Image 1 (cartoon, rainbow, N blue to C red):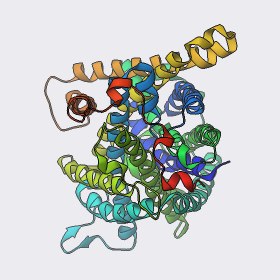
Image 2 (image 1 turned 180 degrees about the vertical axis):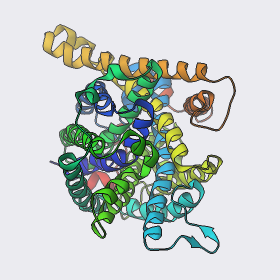
Image 3 (image 1 turned 45 degrees about the vertical axis):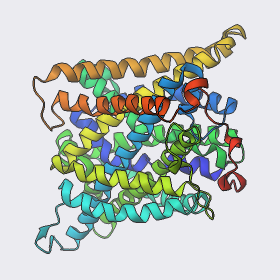
Length: 480
């Protein structure tokens, strides 16, 4: 199995567990295990669509290229755009998580203020400032190439998973809250809006398995990317279910909601004394860093594919002569993420900012996954004449999965529009929650118009992305 494909797909799991359990609990109570199982089904359908499309047309632009060819250049560009913006937003808010963990370390060491500034791990501003420093280091690592990144990712993964499995296993055995089958019953969720929001959050949990398909030009064969993505997806499901049950065995609903993004360090403090209680904090830190690195992989390479087609500027096609990576694009992406992170000062509490960002990303993830699934069903529609099994796998499963995700996103968007009567910068305000993904989609349509009418990109004439072989890249010649 190709190391790039697995490492690129597996790094976000610990971060999702650490910051997501409290977030999901605040929406659906103790039914997180049920939603994780339900969310896995359409995501698995999307994964089979990715694997089939990748075998047919391996390209680091993946959804942008596949949707453009099958559904047309406008939805294709929109797929690429929302993927990229969502990834940048993810990097921006993850910087606050990294900063929060560092501040927790400082607090445990007895340092609660510096130069008159309170080192509050729940403050968005202070956490972001610290996180931006870490982003500089992560950017340098991402620029040095896939070999160095892969080795670093695997080292972090081994430690993260060992700590997570150890502490969650301990909580599962010794937890004081009785296990309940009702945790797997989605019908106990209070409302349709809460169900839809929770399911979108659960889909977001799995986000990241598709990173393997963005390095298909840097792997030995397209099959490596597909296997890496699918293996990571099933591993994530097992880990998520194991961790969600363990968290609920040890913590009450009130504890989950109150601790939010610090749920994993809180679990460590409940189960063990120092220095062992600090291990989950270290694991969360490593996972946040690894998640940002893994997000940079598809983002910079997706922009490279768009730059090759002139739907984006020539900056994005600049490849480092030594490392063979889109270094200029990587630096610009992280710079934009830093600016967005600074804008998050408008929402003073870290937990509020996280909920707003995750909901926005969840909706656009549902959009581009759904469009890519429909692209698979359209491209391989002739398979419906090749027997029931092939028709189901190539057309039926992707089409149903795409319909579920797009329908879910549409319903949640409608719920947001009708739940509030005014705009307010708060994750409890429906207009605000709807405005974030809406701005991303509208900006994508504007950029598509610029690409077509100003840059006169050939992509909008043919709907086809540039072939991977059209440009000879150093990273293509040094596949790992």
